[in-house]
Length: 140
Image (cartoon, rainbow, N blue to C red; front, side, top):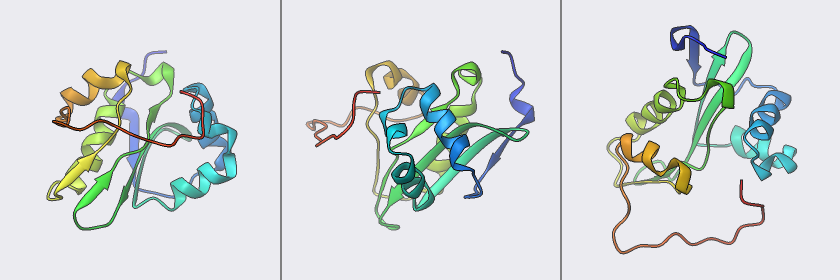
């Protein structure tokens, strides 16, 4: 599918049906879709949530978790596969990073296949650090 990003609307809203979110997560094979109620609550309670819409269809989203002053973490950035490589993800991450531009730390974990994308968005590998986690899902 080819789309024109000009018709994509970006919103800072929490007015999203849970099924739309699940469709997006399942299309990207994210294991958090297996916990739909928890996923929905997590997104609704994020510090920031930016969504991308093609008319009434949710085609992308990104969220931030933050202390509101110094540190922000970007846990999720997803775009429907048929809408990828059209600037939607880049616009979402730019909207989020501009909101937190003055923060001391902006953090994310990038999967290997997404590393170059985030590098183009201004992120760099953290020196002398390694990502660590206790993870209750499957690799997505």
